[in-house]
Length: 70
Image 1 (cartoon, rainbow, N blue to C red):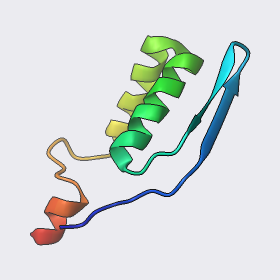
Image 2 (image 1 turned 45 degrees about the vertical axis):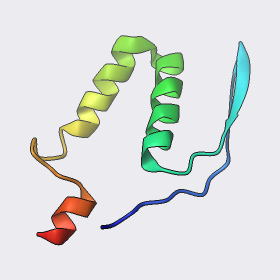
Image 3 (image 1 turned 180 degrees about the vertical axis):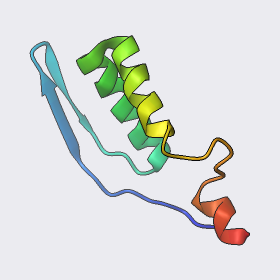
């Protein structure tokens, strides 16, 4: 099984506040990214942006871990 790990320190700021994050996995990074997208673009803007990213992958894409075993 392939595991993706992340070693990052993220500092984000906006007019109403700021946050610091240290994601360790793609899932944690995605949660942080989505949260920041919603803050920046609103819910519909974030959904639209995320939909554009999903368009580049086949609908049934299984990810690195599953495709590496095939």
